[in-house]
Every structure is written in C-alpha cells, then in structure tokens.
Image (tube, rainbow, N blue to C red; front, top):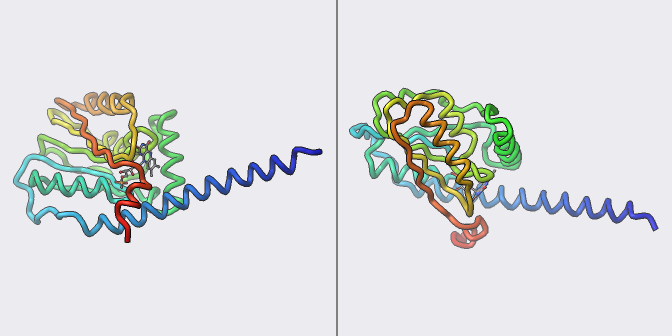
Length: 204
Ligand SMILES: Cc1cc2nc3c(=O)[nH]c(=O)nc-3n(C[C@H](O)[C@H](O)[C@H](O)COP(=O)(O)O)c2cc1C
C-alpha cells in the first residue's frame, strides 16, 4: 500500500493545525488590544517636566499599557513607535514571526518604524518598551536603537512577554545601546503568563 495518501493527509493536518494556532493567536491579540486600549491612564497633557522619556512599540496593547503607566508615574514624555508591517491580524502576525526569526540570523534586517527618529537630547533617562518576539525584543525597538545615539543617557529596556525570553538577546541589546553612547543600562520585565490564560482571565 502506498504511503503517499497518508503522508498527504498528515501534511494537510499539520498545515490546518498551524493555521488554527495562528487564527487563535490573532483572535486573542485583537481582543486584548480592544480591552487594553480603554484601560490605561493616559499621560497628562504637558507632561514634560521630567527628564525621562518612554518610547515603546506595542502590537496588541500590553506594552502600551505598561508604557502609559510608567509615563504617568514618571511624568515623562511618551512616544509610540508604529510598525505597519506588524499590524494586528494574520498577515501582521506572519510578518512578525518571519522578521523576528530573520533578525537572529541577520541583525541588519530591520523594519520601517514611524517616527523613524525622535529628538532625545532633552532626556537623561530613556525607557524603551517592547514585547518579546521569539525570545528577543521585537524588531521595531532594535530599529529604534539603530537610528539613535544615547550619549550619556541611562537606558532602561522593559519587555512584556508571555513565558520566556533569552538573556543572550538582552545582552546583545545592551551591547548595542552601550555602543551607541549610553552611560548605563537596565532591563525590566513584565511576565504576563500564557495567552490562553489571558483569554480566560478576561472573559467577555
Ligand atoms: C510574533 C510573536 C512572537 C512572540 N514570542 C514570544 C516569546 O518568544 N516569548 C514570550 O514569552 N512571549 C512571546 N510572545 C508574546 C508577547 O511577547 C506578549 O504577548 C507581549 O506582551 C505582547 O506585547 P504587545 O501587546 O505590547 O504587543 C510573542 C508574540 C508574538 C506576536
């Protein structure tokens, strides 16, 4: 008996399983983003008194929420980075996975971000926020570092993530920030738990 029909069926099942996971992740992320949008204390207008700034990228709202909290607490300027390639939905998710993977092999592969540059000279402390993608800070925050210098500044990377990140990627990020003039570097993290727990924790 030929194995071909069985192999084809197994391949089809595997493809359907991957598609199912991607669809589930997309659904959870979109729901999260809607729920988190309304949650955050926004930074009061004119919050420019402190010498700290919070710059972040967020795809589904979690890092944005942490960033808004932080900026509110520190009375800091808040800057959101947009990366249109990774907008919510299946194409954005596929793109995110592809680029996060490519970044590991080719560190120069960086996405377009908006704004591309920010005047950081008024600040002495910079908080850089990003989700973890494939164990590493997501490509947009690497792109941000690539386009800036941090001469004499204290840089704090804060990450939100579901379960795990790689210390080697944080060390590489630190090295890049320090090579671009930073005085010092810290890493902070917000462990959120599994996505499916999020979905259970916020029933509609
Ligand atoms: C493409 C992709 C890859 C991810 N990889 C990881 C990972 O390696 N480790 C982890 O703990 N979480 C991972 N996550 C989960 C996110 O880090 C987590 O949901 C984060 O809080 C999302 O932040 P955001 O809502 O600000 O986009 C990944 C999410 C995406 C979309």
